[in-house]
Length: 350
Image (cartoon, rainbow, N blue to C red; front, side, top):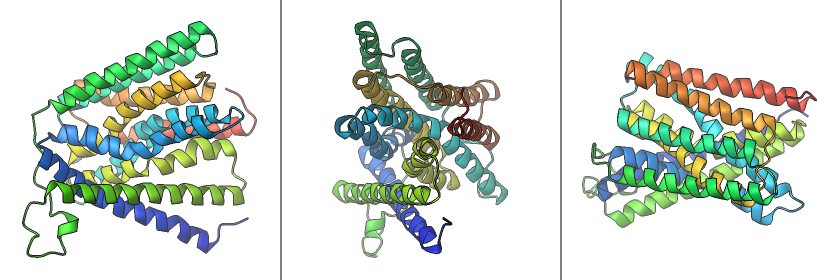
């Protein structure tokens, strides 16, 4: 069955809702950073990252608690490992494409302006905790007491490492958030448009933005599932490619807005901070409440994510900067993974 015009409209509506929510969110979260006196690195990697990562973080928790016949564990494992992979590959590619277009239009430089220490902290923590998740899948998968004990120990280590990372980000005083544009909720009030907003009104806008983002993402996933069923798209393609793209849209949209405006610390930190968070807490949930028995295709996605991030880290170490070209290269791993998924779903084996 072909896609009809009404299906396209139903896809565009939630995308518009998500985009509007992200516009409100980026503006509100910058003001929240100002009101709390936080550094840009903390705002991007903690406030923005956790705020936009919460919707997809709930997917594995709900799957484990409410799904039946063991299907919940498989859904949870797929959701847990799918999020960091999408951010490390597709989100980086979208960011690189945004910078390329903006730089060609003379709106910004082709290289990112970020703090090396901040980027290094995100990369070190992500590679460390996600590598432990791979080790757990290779060594401690299964239902035996030894395997459960090993997974539990790694889960505790992941939470501990994230606590250290959180402490480091919160103590960063290197670069405070600049005063952003007028808070959207105050713009209709011309007499108050130049008055700094109060913390409660900032929190109201952030909460409203998150509501739009979460609601739009849920609508988008529902519409994608409907269209996939009409086109008889393979369930594995839907589960590990289409749905994760939808749930990661908030991070992508937020970063696109920030990259376009030259706010690279916020843009990249939103992605890398979400990766650190999702490789810590959701993975620890998976390690404790599932057998963490991952297929080869799943482990391949984890390895791809680690390689993509290692390339960025190497460029920062030896070139002392990151350009849009390396971000675009990260997207290659996503498209290679698509080929592997299609190959496997057609009856092949890895």
